[in-house]
Image 1 (spheres, rainbow, N blue to C red):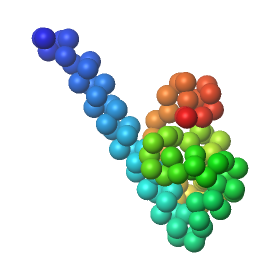
Image 2 (image 1 turned 90 degrees about the vertical axis):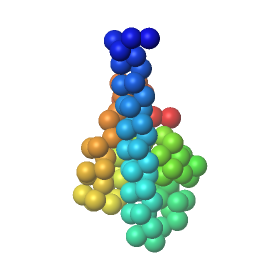
Image 3 (image 1 turned 45 degrees about the vertical axis):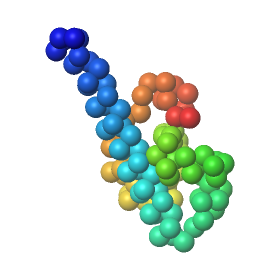
Length: 101
C-alpha cells in the first residue's frame, strides 16, 4: 500500500481518536461540575429532562449530547461548560437528528 492510499485511513483513525478524547473530556467536565453542585446523576438528568442512563453515557464519553442539551448544561453550570462544549465537533447526522445517540 503506497502513501497516497494509506493517508486517508490514517487521518480517519486520528480524527476518531481526537473526537473520542474530546468526548471523554466533556464527560469528565460534566461529572466534575455535577459533583461540585452536589447533585446525583439522577438529579441532573431530571433537570436536563433526559434518562439518567443517557446522562451516564455522556459522562463516560460514549455519546455526545445534542445542541439543545448542551445549551441546557450551559444554563445549569454557566460559562464553565462553554470551552468544553465548543471543543467537541458535531457531525451532520447528529445535528440533523438533534441527538448523538
